Image (tube, rainbow, N blue to C red; front, side, top):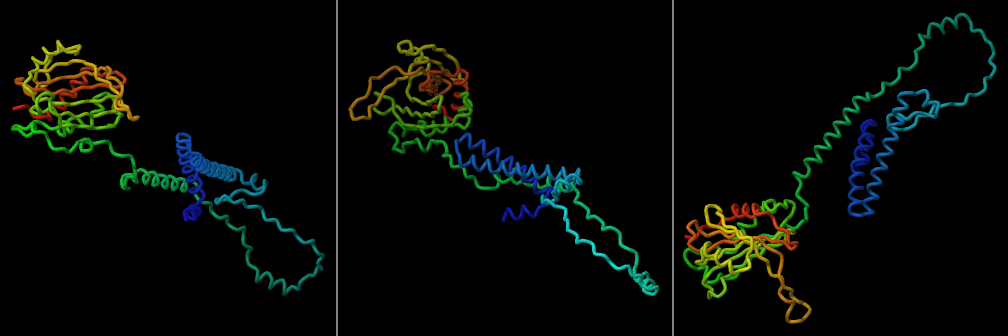
Length: 357
């Protein structure tokens, strides 16, 4: 049906249309075929390019015939507006037969001259179609096709089968909260931490705007050795490059006391500062690396020192009456963003978490 409609178009509309469509689709399909190593698509792209080449050849022949019709006729016919060669019709003539010279009578000559009017002149040649008008019509058709291709994705349902990135609801455990979360005022839960951390612009804040979230996790933990009386929820968002962990600890330890305890730990590069008007401290420490053997043995490899992580610890309230939030970044390659990136994330995330009353 489409081929029949295309053949109904005038020559100067149909052939440029085939050239444009064949070249555009052919080049695009060939590019995708080379990129995906798809030989079937390469064959389809080649077919489009062949159609475009044949149309170019027809247009060149038509232009040559229009410019020099006598040479085209002597070469065996020139292509008409439909691309068909029109040969000169040559009819063989019979040999002339001798005719008797008979002089008609005068009366017959008079009637002959009376009944014969003026001889008609040569037939008026048919007016050829205006090439400029056909070119304008072709441009209009091309414009309509371009507008249709541009507007089609906006009004057609999306066929993207790419799975959506993980969400906080996928990483939550949906278990009953420990009794530490049932007090008044209630501590923040891991789901709330995850919602605050899993921002649409988190990858851009990390300096890797092209990455998407690969996994999300959250747990409503309690601090160890507290008989489940101290809530310590945490959430983590993982990208290909970085992993960001967000936790809150509702104990009575102030930032000043926390800095003093760092002297007995393995934290390095400690720097006290203020974030959103709250006492805070920057520090670095190595993560732990361990292996789990799934081959049947009960234990895996020994615990080893993992890559370096950078953390900012901020008090839960402006008066630093106890409790803090931790935002930690690390990567398997060992590279870390600058402290300004870490502080920028903290300033965006912490307002989502209510202060400790």
